[in-house]
Length: 112
Image (tube, rainbow, N blue to C red):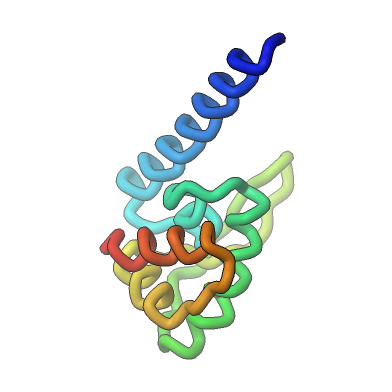
């Protein structure tokens, strides 16, 4: 596989992941913080990092979300789902340093 093909596949994979997450949020109305971050264009690893920081700021914003269950690799775990408006309220408080995270925070703040 040459560089051009590898790059094209990566771009399509990233775009599909972002669109899938955004569609899930539109369809269900609420999603986990990591899903909101993926819909904002972050990779899953970056999304988990930002979601952890947003989770800490959720208590400062007074946002509780709704309890739910998420499934991954056959395992069920407790999670909290947030609407886009709730995520926007949290993202206003969030002050990231990394440029990619700043861009994602701006997208999350405008999502509502």
